[in-house]
Image 1 (cartoon, rainbow over the protein chains, first blue to last red):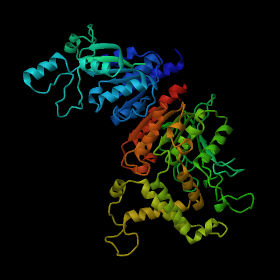
Image 2: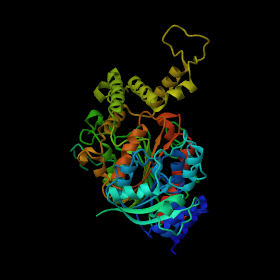
Image 3: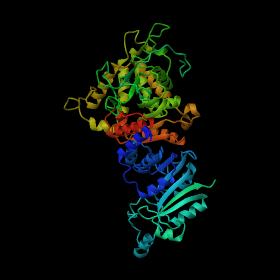
Length: 220
Length: 362
């Protein structure tokens, strides 16, 4: 390992961003090859970008809505701008990145369809994860209580949640099919982001998985 | 040197200060670009006013721009009055001060003179070009004119073009200078006078634009100046009036009125997109520079929207850009003041870039 890489590692370790990467982010990181051009939309405190920089030499970019998150990322040496998936992706050139990541954010966008189409335009690949509204606990909650579901993963009440466009895994797969978005890989995850073994496109996944994780590209 | 306006100009002098030591690889140089009324005394006492350097909060040993680690250069801009050739100097052709026969200069001209200094110092690639307000304009111009010579760029509280409102404010200032009978069509030096009243008024008007309504209100409110009640006259009854008068009066001791005309004009003419088919993104095409664009929430002279259009242009070419908006109630002047969030962000950005550049810790 060269001296520069060592310095890079030390610098990032100092930030404390690398201590506990969320398991779903870890799965996303595993999909990204070394040295890829990556844009992480809704990058939060930059945990994924820092991890990719450290483990795969990825010089990534981030976009984050909260100014506190942005400032913290930049303070830690990451390239991040303030913006959101609905308003600030239009300027990016087509195929400007190898991988565009949208983790746990799709359900909070105003126009998820446009966002998905933009992701596969500006990235040669897009990695999207979202909570599955078809999960049995959500169905059960609504069936038995007749009230908007509140689960460990979706813990906010209907009136103060940023999540305005929920979908099920089945909905998502159908939309990709209709809009010519190729699903290259997909995983069904539990609430902690640990993968299940069964086919994410099957009925069981839509009932049992709490999250879906998709690697997409546009049909070329 | 052929100026932007077409005039062949030279010879000329560029005054600059340096701090710290250039490393053996010549890879640790930071060029600081000063704002409209700044100068090269970025981190040391000003020779005329005796006040601390204008960015000494930020630049110095152990500071964010650490002179123990980086080699810092700051040049007085072309047209300035602190040693670099400007309108108060003698025109070699006539032996008289240039006055208004000094050619109109642009931000790009300023940057080209700085490039000569950087070349003279044997630096092929600057680690970083950094500056606020007009200094930020120079940073953007550097990144566009000499992309390979700029590893990182930090344009702060600035814009890629001067807005109509800002041109309007500048015009008020220039008219105040020109309306002073002591201006003599710019030839005041040969008359042994100076348009001090006009320049002071220009400074007063401009100074308001550097602050925020909130700063003025909390700092001065309607407080009266050393008196119990208003005097029903035009003396400086209010503290804010007295403050502005002081700002105006102290400015004329250190700044040349014609320089003020020329430099404000250079800012007015600044429009980076204009020479790239009106598309700002084209100016940054293929850039490898790492950008950190910074704005302040209460800055209404160079509002965040201006920084955002720079960021959008950078995004359009998938440039490596960071953008932070710093929460501050101190207006445009915030970039010169002690803003911990700003300092922390800049430090993080510079450290990150230093790692990518392979610079060793000091």
